Amino acid sequence: MANKLVKELTKGVVKENPTLVMLLGMCPTLAVTTQALNGIVMGLATTFVLLGSNIVVSALRKVIPDKVRIPAFIVIIASFVTVIGFLLEGFAPSLYDSLGIYLTLITVNCIIFGRAEMFASKNNVLYSACDAIGMGIGFTLALFIMGSVREILGSGKWLDMEIPVISDNPMLLFIMPAGGFFTLGVIIAMVNKFANRKPPQEIECGNCENCTNCAKSGECDKEKEENK
Image (cartoon, rainbow, N blue to C red; front, side, top):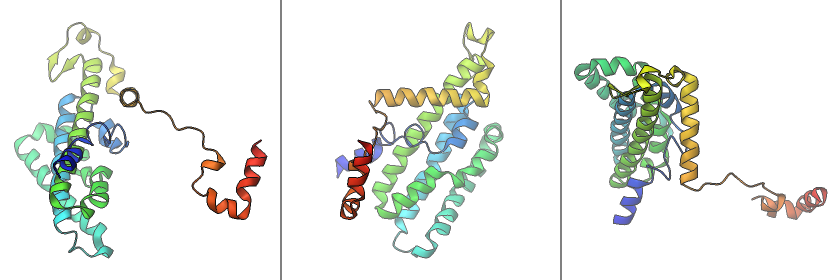
């Protein structure tokens, strides 16, 4: 049990990072990461909603009727988004304004809804909480790295601290949308290199999962003959 808990806690950091591996949550990733602080706050807010929704969905998974599970998940997620929105607006209005509409859009973040549908609705509360924390940490880390790179190169600052030399000649491209896409692509490439992921190999007819069915009708043999 302990090994599974550790696995659920750590898988979202690198191996199944929701942003850098599964390419989910691209909208906030590209929109709010012009500053490292914005990335941290958005990541933590998303983690809060993810943790709360996973726990509630898991606890009610046997109570929520299957026909209305999607509307129920949305209501649960939206409730936690409302709570974190009120908290930020009350205690950190400047950050609330910086995140803008993207804070509200956490409700439809595919990371949160995906974990509720694919994991929390099928596992107990403890595993669901660990899954949420791991995915939240991975998402926050990705946004922090993105925000740090773009803020340093695009503004010559990092967490409001000026970086010598760069602050005199910032590359404004990095705080623009094109710079966000470029930074994200480079980070994803580095993660793939670090994880030793290789591009998919060419799929031949014989490797197709439907090969058995094709063989019965002779289609598979015809395909192989045509490729020779």
